Image 1: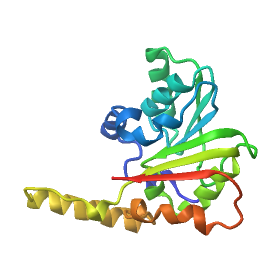
Image 2: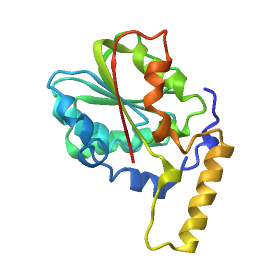
Image 3: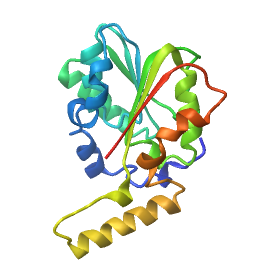
Image 4: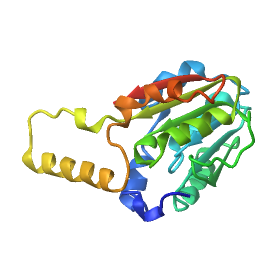
Length: 202
């Protein structure tokens, strides 16, 4: 893996895990909901504590959903949440989206929310996502464009916190403008074949 776990700003933070566990497919991934069909095999890259992964699993059942995350500490939370919510067609494992441990043409859809902005080489991850897609499959990504955030009224303390967060991202080799540039990634990789790419930002 290219990055040490400590390079991820929210790595190991209990507060961050709790916040991530409140995410839902309907709120964070509504653009992909119409594409999910029963029986599909789906990969969720950067699954965190697994709340979105479970929403996907319910929609594609009896198809299987695999959630991966670089942070090994997230996986037990995700597994426990699956038990609590009674979802059985999902499994989780530690993996790097830039070097996916799956064979070519394994999944019908690859989803990712709030991951690529943390990667040192998001184009490499996009290539890997395409590689594991079956013919006609879909890569669906959602990433923020942090510098475009607008807050009203302006609060100086929060503005300072935002500026520090963006600086930390850049120092760690991440890209806080990932949501702005991600639509280019699919077209810039001429070695990839097939696969529809969808990009959403906030």
